[in-house]
Length: 64
Image 1 (cartoon, helix red, strand yellow):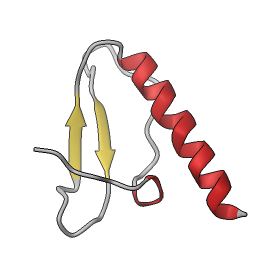
Image 2 (tube, one colour):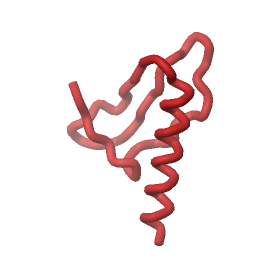
Image 3 (cartoon, one colour):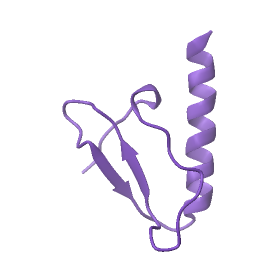
């Protein structure tokens, strides 16, 4: 399934992916979205970096 979680509604994502835990855990409290969603794929370090950068950029724009 696909879910849309706005950047301002998701919890912080850890910058590092552990050796045994290779997925990203997305947490939110939206009504129609599961509270914990784990995403796994290749290039997880890059994915984490991009998501965190995009979220930071979005949140900085929202604060203005």
